[in-house]
Image 1 (cartoon, rainbow, N blue to C red):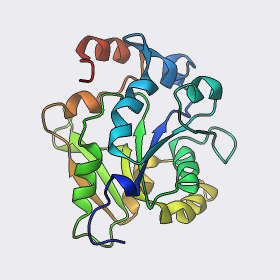
Image 2 (cartoon, rainbow, N blue to C red):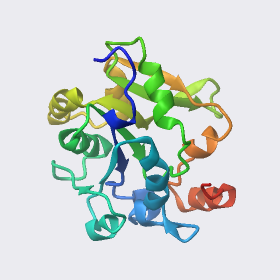
Image 3 (cartoon, helix red, strand yellow):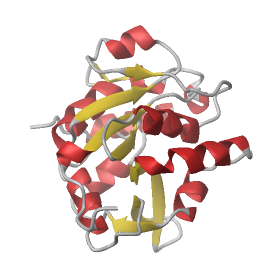
Length: 213
């Protein structure tokens, strides 16, 4: 790995929108509206300036996602195996050395997300993942938000093996790789980490939302 953290030209963005949306009654979360725009469109607007290009991981409504103007990837493995499967497809399709994943239901991305994760890799030549952790308001301390991850494309092969062996837990697998954890507790970070994964959470996010500048 490079001794310095990767710059935007070395990073491809991946919006994870391939889930079944069970807590949303089966709705496709990335296409749910926030201020009259799909959640995935908000995420794309904020992620695109930080990376060289953006991909969307989606297993339904490919035409609707393609209308956002970026490539859409269906999981290379069948059966809705969860975010690890979307991550694998992203890594297999990634044209750059690094992939930055974000969840479609956390669209309030801070403008320095990629830069802060990349900076954490500086001086950590063995690390292949930079993970976001934020304050745990219920238990105290900090907890991982593993859908926000900057990872090296060399992890495609070990991830494929892990999935074949039955692994489905995103945080468990990512944190088992050589990694660094990055604290996200600055102003604005809390809004980014608030996922709209239920109707109630989406309504709450809409009440807190500020349009990107």
